[in-house]
Image 1 (cartoon, helix red, strand yellow):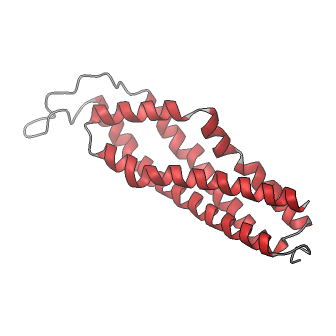
Image 2: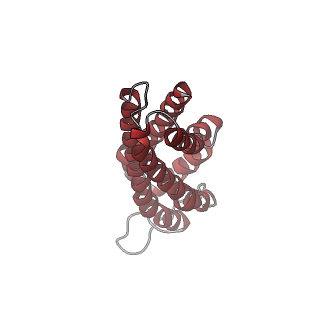
Image 3: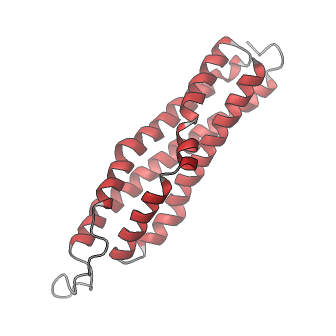
Length: 183
């Protein structure tokens, strides 16, 4: 039983860490970098990223922690290492918060952006004094996407990072609980 608890916590921690790293990298590198690009480049890049990320490796790392955290909660409740239970529960709540932000905000924004005409020729001018290429459907698509997506990505990055930290501490507590489980 203890080996199953340890393996469950370890894999859930790794999954949460992978998601924390991915979403945080978008927050501090990818989106600021894309934010400096033209509308057409921004929309095309995000469309391609959003299509490429839906793959087995991402889905495994993103989805697997949820049932593992539920199992870890049950195992900690009924087995060794009960001292880690509050941290496992905190990680479950935090991970689910980030999970639902992804499904409820970021994915719908990705889907909406996917319908933008990325092959549009940028407008020559948005009016007197406006910079070239700063109007039209690409600008509208970007304006409807970028600010909200960046904000909610930061929320999910923080939630997944906090879940990872809680799981790392739970794993530590579980490991130091000893054979009697610290119950």
